[in-house]
Length: 369
Ligand SMILES: [Zn+2]
Ligand SMILES: [Zn+2]
Image (cartoon, rainbow, N blue to C red; front, side, top):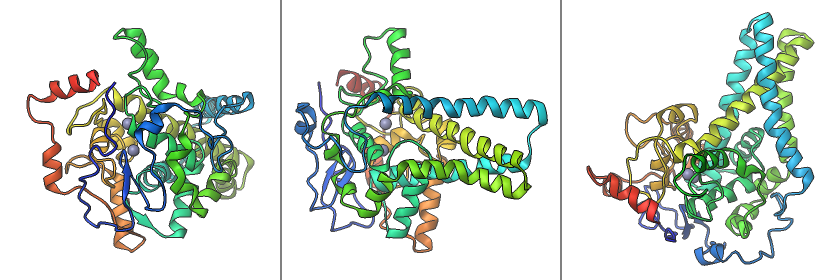
């Protein structure tokens, strides 16, 4: 098995605004100097971790029966909400308030995942102050995809071992080249992995986040913020219409249907965007650029770009690759809310571009790894 270098696409990553306080990097993640970065051999050794149990802000390493039941509820309840929304729409039509609550909550919590959980906390692709740190951690938590520290640990591990044996949610590690193994792999990458226990050594990927009191506090309050994310559209819907039915529709559309959409769009980055789409840049995995999820997932669908340049705040690296998360990051930078927005320079982009006729080599390389 070939292990992707911890520094793939990162160590020589030229920063537009280099941050002298950040030195060690792993799979696109830059760790502050006082935090020991996880090393590939450690993560690979599968040795029994001593600190993964009861890590603050993270699920216990071994999922209890109760926790698995919770995951089933979090997966099934939004699906039931979609059925209920369909039934109400069939019977009574669809009102603008429900639609607006769905869109508003989809945008707020979806960006909470892409700008907050992913680009800010996992990859440190820009910096911000304490208030914005709190805002992004809370918005991401409302998406109900797990506590922020847990989410970032899994995603950093995904980058370090992308589409290799230790990738927590690769669609490509599920048997031979049969159609059944492809289906199994796609399902596992999409949502099957949610039911697995934490991989050994996961806690080592998030020492920097555990050292941040704001991130740690929000991570521990995860369930509270999920409930707030469900209650908020119900309260707004009830107040705007001054009716219980308005509150119910707000809960269904702004809470459950929105959660269903954000979940499946995010999970599709792990499943669809490691299977279908084009490759613009060289990366040691099967990551793909997918137009549909480039739009639906606020720029995250340019996933091959992201694996080639994991620390970049910008995922849509070509002018036509629409990346709404990056537009928001740039807008926040303009008004002084964020600083040190990292993007690769033109030279670095050119060097990694997949050359004409070299695509097959890249694929073979990824398969042989
Ligand atoms: Zn990926
Ligand atoms: Zn990432």
